[in-house]
Amino acid sequence: MLFETVALSRLNEDIAAACQNDDRAFNGGDGFLGFIGSKTGLTLDLLTHRSFGTQGSKLASALIGFTQIGWFGVGVAMFAIPAAELLNIHPWVLVIIAGACMTASAYVGIKGLEIVSFVSVPLITILGTYSMIRATIDGGGLVAIFGKSTGSMTIFAAVGMVIGSFISGGTATPNFVRFAKNNKIAVITTVVAFFLGNTLMFAFGAVGGAFTGQEDIFYVMIAQGLAIPALVVLGANIWTTNDNALYTGGLGLSNITKFRKRPMVLVAGFVGTVTAIWLYNNFVGWLSFLNATLPPIGAIIMLDYLMRKKAYDPGSESKLRPINWFAIAGVVAGGLVGNYVSWGISAVNAMVVAAIVYFVGTKLVYKD
Image (tube, rainbow, N blue to C red):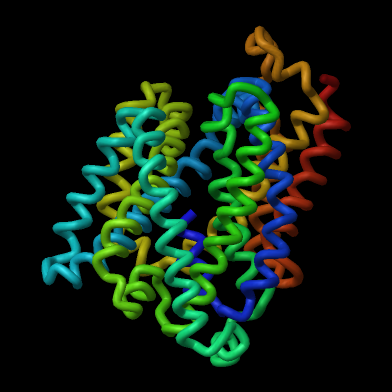
């Protein structure tokens, strides 16, 4: 979730309240994806076997997998660059060390993610809350802080970028909640995590960024005299988020190549590490890419589940079609609309167009 903090800090701080309201609309979608993952016990990539087809699923896996690898790279640089400045060493030294350590823990699997998360989540909550309260007090209140904002990005563009970043993580929800004890826990955990967690991250990034004028949450806390706590706590939190991203990226590459997940986690970690600084320097462009490509995939998975629940039953693998061309067309059409239509919120536009293309085409051509 730390990436959303940075996203909000880098964008116009005046959009904080608007983004928060729009994000709530997506919590239901994330919860439903969590329900599907828990109900079926399938990973995201296996879910796309049903909606996109066994071969068509490779497109969804590529988009989601490489997007998550990109998030991994951004996270590595997000930690390494400010930390290198504090320690007066070359950023690439820490990029390589951090990338290797994070890749190693992701290689362990879901148990490694659990251990890192157990430590980092409470710490970032405490530190972020302290930073936000301190900024509010020192800045003379929220009205005074946000009154200084000088951002030039339009509200729809900014909201769309932040929503795109949330959907990136939300789409991968089935990969993790499939381990939940039951469907109720899966849904509650997903909704609470995205609603409360995202709300906190919005607040941390918006308030701290507006007060200090810094675009990165790491630099925000350094400006507040919290350099050492930031180094430890944000490093641990980035580690958690990056392991989740790498786990999802490894699953996506595994679906594409048919190699086992663990070797693909290593490949994903290598790619994310070597591209880390470039991705960090092109952060806003990366958010724009997310905003247009990922929403259609989640929308099609949810719609397909509602339309064809029998395809998700155990033993249905032999009946799956190779490609659902209308799922492919939905992603392409949604991506084009998300990229080139300036009206409204890009993520919403992309989801609506993808759902319409998929629904109409599937109903007209396919009988099951």
